[in-house]
Length: 427
Image (cartoon, rainbow, N blue to C red; front, side, top):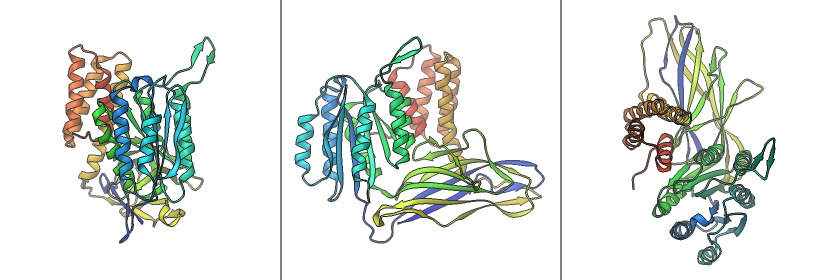
């Protein structure tokens, strides 16, 4: 398994007469299988909400989705299942799948809806189970919940009881540090979208919205297909820039595909930057967009930076491998002529759609309904420019409702967030 990396500037040509120029650098990274290479073994943990609100059809459909997933696991794959409500319990300890029917029977018997929603305990136990089978495998969790989690009680200066959301964020950060990926699935319309997005983003996972119980199987299948396509794990992008080139100060790097994630950037002692990517898939690129500022450069073709990927190859039990170094070129011209790259431009608009929607949500929380509607309309127009018609419809519908004096429902807010992060699937 090897790393494939493509890079392109929004405009390769630079005006030599300008003291400063701004460019966006798109970097596309994926795993490429050698001939006859097999899929990697999977190490999955399902962290499932069994609170009282999941009673009836919701829990039945989740169990059906889990059973379908078990049917797709291969010899050598591992599974664990953690259930949480007012507390968390391991109902299927981490194990190689040898008897799927027995596991299904245990899940049907032990998964019972009752009690509150303490997500952090489930996440903590799920991470613990996942760690038991990481060697040589793709290790990912599916965290499903229909609730917000329980907040601490504050009396004046004192905080009484644990803050579930804060603990979830802490566990998500720890999971990323030990190279685990957590995907989150919000069930229904009352889950905490900020929290589930934070958890998924921390480890390069994805956020899904199961609006209706019968959609559970579809979303589990979609996530499973993505996990099954992973070829390399624990990938980091190493970006080195020439002395006349710098990163933008505010939100300089973001992933724009397959989902939009604002990526943290860690500076190294040698002046390079490290960006965690997570797992690399064989049939889907991770596309990263960096915002660069270039100072005055001499005329001619110039190397303005280099990119490299550090990664693990679980199939060979190899860690900390380094790809080749790919240079980034720019053409510095006295008689400047633009050479815009349409693919990079689409990535720029994809990120703009997300950030415009974020701004709309901020204005809505501040009570500025008119401002929120305007930003949602702008995001809808951006979605149309990149051919994301489903997103444009959702965003424009929300804008129209705000303009009509209506309040956006929980379902509206969830859909708005999801379509801003990824391409909405129709089914």
